[in-house]
Image 1 (cartoon, helix red, strand yellow):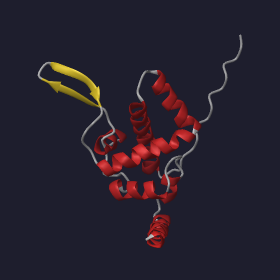
Image 2 (image 1 turned 90 degrees about the horizontal axis):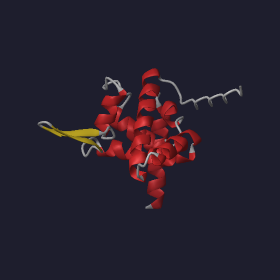
Image 3 (image 1 turned 135 degrees about the vertical axis):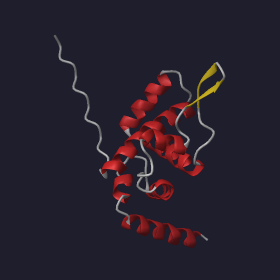
Image 4 (image 1 turned 60 degrees about the vertical axis):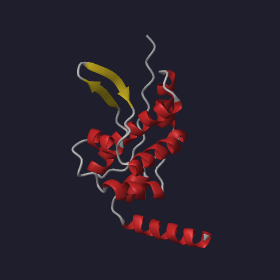
Length: 153
């Protein structure tokens, strides 16, 4: 049983390595072979989506406003969307907490009063935007430049 799992994992890795977007996806912190394979299976090169917002809505990580008549209730997590893709984005965001940039964003959301899962969904949405741009431009992930320290007056 364990041998079969290892065999399948190596086959998936070989197939993924042959895909032209594999390097783009795996360059992002938190995205490994299995997550990259899941994303490619679910969205391909993301050319079917007009924007990163459309991709986020498809994945179910975009916030939804509930309204009925004149009653508008605040934004809530979506209960719809592609569950497999949502899980891939969620797990990738969780794994990316080791990355300083992602951790800083997560900590900022927690400081705003969001609970752990809500902050992770916010991080997943932000990473979805970056991933969409990476796929569109076929560019690997680049760590953002640190902001220069303000000069003393």
